Image 1 (tube, one colour):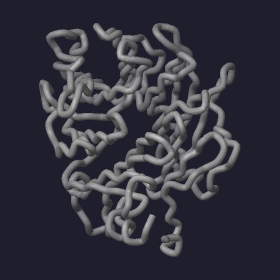
Image 2 (image 1 turned 180 degrees about the horizontal axis):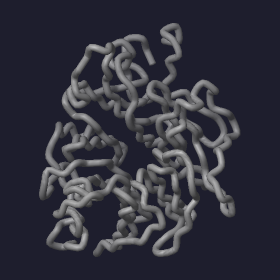
Image 3 (image 1 turned 135 degrees about the horizontal axis):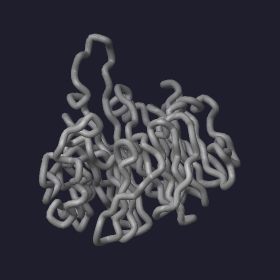
Length: 332
């Protein structure tokens, strides 16, 4: 990272989300943060930006950036090597097509988005009130959770209880094996399966808020929760690995699932073990990243781990520096 890019785009904020396409193309959502205790602005008042590590494609440096104000949380995915950003208001921005921000078509209410996900080379945005939208083309999204076609999804949404209150019923995590085999989950173990035509509730043996879902190439579904429990299974057969630190992110790489936790560590699952085991790699990542890890993400080529200010990619053999700024003397 050049000193000029650091000064202009990076020094006042932190990494929020990551989307690797390959080792030479990694996208990040980055948001400015308060620089002193007297700054009383709300989070959505700070500038947010999408920037991409593209060393082979960017003639001005290793990174390219676009920025905007007033987004709050934002999530990142990709379609055909083009990054797509979804903000918490279910507005979208397609970087390659230069669409600018636009509302999700066919959004029945002002739902809150909670993420955006690639499933079998397709992109899905999802969020509260059990909402899921499938990308169909530039500025074209199909709502696959409409109330008219899927009235069972809206059970408990319209009524207020001590557990669920209106919009708080919804999907905070989603993944799938293909368009006809998708899992989504939310508050207190609220868990659903979509077969391409209908949604059905799945009796998941955990009642904690679901934080992450990964459908592995081993045919299993891995569901992480805020209380640390991890459910492993598929359809109606599940077992629980219990109990652990809060699971924050999960992904599949190199024939295994990886899970990051609130304590800043990375874990994986081994058949027959009663607990998750700490992940090991052929080459250790920098020791100063231990306990600081914010999240993980993956593609076929690499696993990316990132803190608030650093990111490294593991290709199955060695770690590649994506973002590293221990001090200004490190700048090129």
